[in-house]
View 1 (cartoon, helix red, strand yellow):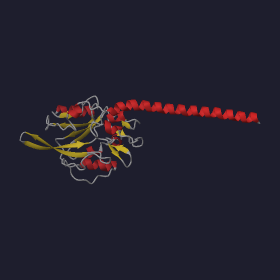
View 2 (view 1 turned 60 degrees about the vertical axis):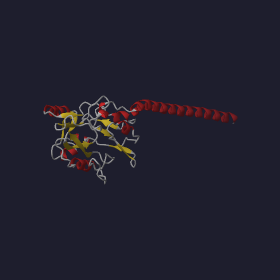
View 3 (view 1 turned 135 degrees about the vertical axis):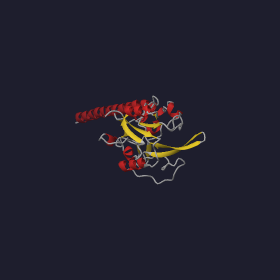
View 4 (view 1 turned 90 degrees about the horizontal axis):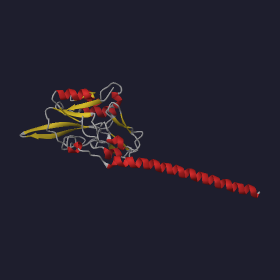
Length: 263
């Protein structure tokens, strides 16, 4: 299996949230009890135990008003800034395109939170770990679609080979967002497609200048400095410990020699 993608067709979405429920069921995450936000999102944003949410946004074109529905989740970047920022290599980028946080290796440093331009990874103060969508890599590697895709009743979500999906939608006149963002994130394995709203989508969280520009954050450069320095500190510590042991042993042998000579 090569690079895969989830395509979200905004023209077909009816805001039923079946995908959101399926995500909770498959990943055994507890939904939050909250109130609707101005974007009709419940909960208002991603959380450590809420890995995808649906949002409704107003789009006004002249005298025409429409609700446009968005499915918000991890974008699964091919150049995954979160993985580059992680100092303990707890984030794996799979050949299928999934970017997955290894809970057993995560130290809760939150470098990935700072590096992500989409504000996706969320820190849990109780477990002191960071969580996000896994692209259902466990299902994909067993020949199944991601849970959200399987649950969608209107084919607003499609899963398949990356290039085949992009080419299929483009050939039908759809605008595709995500297959070419910038050098910071590469291309994303979760893509938005629309024919109805071509040229009308400017939300910075998904399509705006924030993602067209390079939103590189100092944390990745800091990792490149801190990690070698960290290993250097470890090396110096071990060297100091070895030196202390040799010095102590030599001194002990000298004392023992004097004691034996005195006898």
